[in-house]
Length: 247
Length: 318
Image 1 (cartoon, helix red, strand yellow):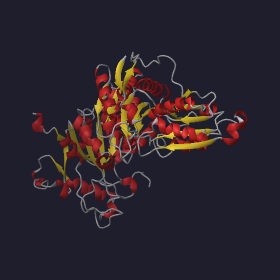
Image 2 (cartoon, rainbow over the protein chains, first blue to last red; image 1 turned 90 degrees about the vertical axis):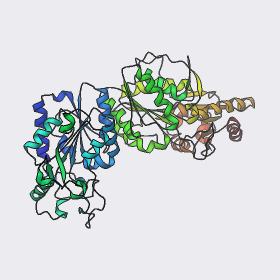
Image 3 (cartoon, rainbow over the protein chains, first blue to last red; image 1 turned 180 degrees about the vertical axis):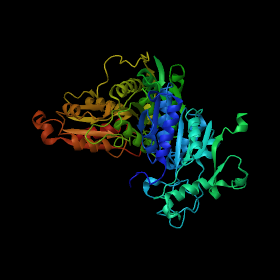
Image 4 (cartoon, each protein chain N blue to C red; image 1 turned 90 degrees about the horizontal axis):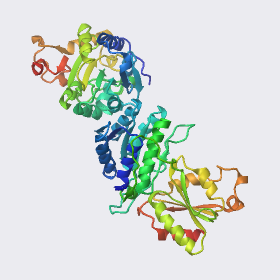
């Protein structure tokens, strides 16, 4: 099935956002490799100037490792979807974080294999309905950012695609973060996921996604993160290093 | 001169051919290549990384190629399926990489001196409309060095994945190896020819064999000659693209071709399909045109073809 962008999925904002963050940083496109294995994340990669490599789905992180080792003078950015980051290339992600590969990975997580039209991904919430699972997905969702942190990533962040200034700030930090760095960006996919889960419009999905985001030390959100994976809530901002570990 | 395992000689050859990067997932039968490459790169301007699986190893090797380096990896026939995807990607994307493949042993054998050549068909990896990626297949530790160096140079100059395919016995023979190794990636002497011919000029029966089987076949040919049989050996040094034209020329007078291999007849299949078409009929001898038969000596399960067995088949075919 086609992998064209869904209405109001927000990936254009993300693409413009990272392009702006890189422009602010001032490192030239000639010093940058961009690697993607496909999926919706490939669309975001298209906004970034640099030498682009499209590689077989799942293998973007190992390919990026080779690039980084061969060219110490260049920055390497990898764009993955939640499918590539958590399933077909999931063990590559674990080991890239563990080794500390000189790579920055941006993971677009829309909680579904969007390009397939609606197959569940490892990040689909328990009970989340998809075209092929109208009764809801049974397994619990995998937390990609938490996984990268546990595996030893030097920098981990997460934001929603609609977070505006907060996203812009985190993107600016991400493009200069110590590798291995992983930024997970939550984005909605209305046709493959939202329409099966009671959302009237893509905009309603954005609102729901924002509602699930736990920002900083907001006391009103306390208690919601006892089991974030089960409740569907997730922390946003820089997750690692935390302000305590930095101090 | 050094005493090296075939596998170690592959690593030395790869470095001599200009390899700058290694990524690998260690597997029992190819792990000496990994260990030697890590040790050799430690003293040079290059990097070696152990990664989580064969796909990652090939991905990283190709990535190094995309970055202007030359990456190498080693794997065994058991995991070739996982590797094919990325070899094909490397061909499509014109990325260099050096890939050593140690043939899987037959399932039933745990003993020494057992080998398999069951990857012949699957190593013919190419795109529609173009030839397969080069696959070189050594029969000695010295040739492991020479062909790994040649494959590395070819990979870089032709921007292609280049493979060295070695059976488990040749991989683990410890033999003297001369390593004229200045690390410059320049070819010392002429590049290897695609085939070795042994007493083929007047041969009426020709064995086709590669790797360790070719060494047994050479003995069988000598023994057959002692009994008055005009036998010869055609040994492909480059397995793919297969030297069909050279084979037809060598087999011009042969009434029979005996394809000896450690599998169920994979090379036989290709030769039967192609021999007789690479040269126009007029250029072939009457004997070859009218009577040439292609015979199989296939041994997938025992893991070895010894000279006596090849000799018996030669006598039968003559």
